[in-house]
Length: 448
Length: 168
Image 1 (cartoon, each protein chain N blue to C red):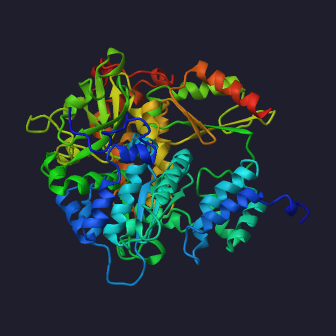
Image 2: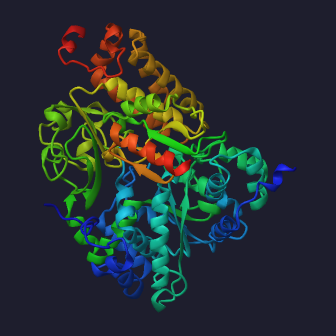
Image 3: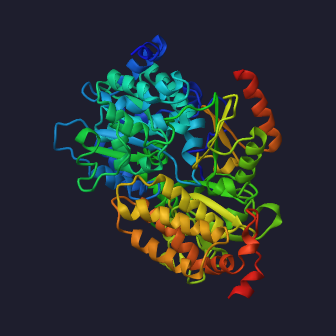
């Protein structure tokens, strides 16, 4: 059993209430930080911890904090990114739903470190039921004197609010989130300036994922060095992994970074193996945006050593043979899953979610969706496969925000590793008319 | 302008709007737009007519176009009428690996409508949506603020019955 820092008390009674949370050690980090540490000392512990952004990008949180412009008199803002929308990802939801005070405490401690007087949690609109849970938790925190004026008599004051989105994946991109919070369409901004210089209302702003902010609580409680002891190399601490797809035990698991992929999939502690006694075909280890890996590349790195659940190991080999840890949205495909169908599905998702500002993304995502639809439904031509490759290559790197890359990578990886399935669809159109069709492994032989 | 009389939030909703506006700096009322549109949509029958959008613009002292451009951008805002019960089925990858497409077909058969349509009695609208963050509990749909997960045909039957009883 690995150490758990975030979900340790998940099953404790009344952990969703402030009294239950305090009973199991809650709000100790708040007392410690506000009463015995300077804001810079808190930031220093976060730096020492090696914590990397848990939303997907993996940028070191402490370093991000240090970019905050403190030279102006403008207000500074901390925004929590709770716009969890990356397909395959549902970890922040569990954390907020079950242990809302962990996020509230993390927000207070982090806001203190950054010198914010007002902070917001931007939550996706579809999580309205969680917004209500968070608002209740925030009201409880105000009542206890953990929020509002002069918190615990320390002279530090903070207001915390929850702000709902309204259905837009793009608002998980930090500048789109800021635009949305200002009451506008979620169109990402051109960077620089970065939000740390000019963010919400043109003021210095830090945007952090729910899990990153929650992790600040154990980091302050136990010290950054203790946190950094967990994990391997630059992948420190624990990570919430959302496991879904064709596995026996879908759900959210807190792992120590460094567990092997094989253990994560087959151990009863985590996914519990592939459902229905089938074999695994592939896995998308970090949310829909990251490259899909076939089973022969999933379990081993190029040097033959086991592939681990870390930022470095999952990306080992680059996109030729690797993928990314991303948001930890771990989607498993069994041997019967149709890779073409799933690639079309994801392409439709990105087409739907493109904000429309940049032509390569706005037009390219729709084009990829249509070509993939044709192939999946038996109307494809062999040259369509090369066409897809060409389109994705022209989207990648040519857009304001990473949504373009996120749309391109899954298509590229599917063709790179499963070209035979695309060819099979083109060669045997009559076999794929049924939406339920399964790709038979022996047919690979016929097409190659 | 005779219609305008109907376009007014209830006193409780107005209180809520006031509370939400207070969350933002005094000159940044526009920030309240998304949460206020959620309230307006709920109060005005589950969708936003141009009249109700104009009303929200007046509430927040912004131009109507600022409301239109936002209302048409975000997928949760309906700019056309919907049934009393809006069923939003997640159709993204992980849900499809666990039978989301079968649930959609079953709903179409059961309600005798296609995705995007409303039943003739105005009770149900069926919509497919992208990832709702319930991938581990698939297949699923959302009605109002509630997630219904691990769906089976039997569960769907029961939910439809319950919704019909609650809303007739």
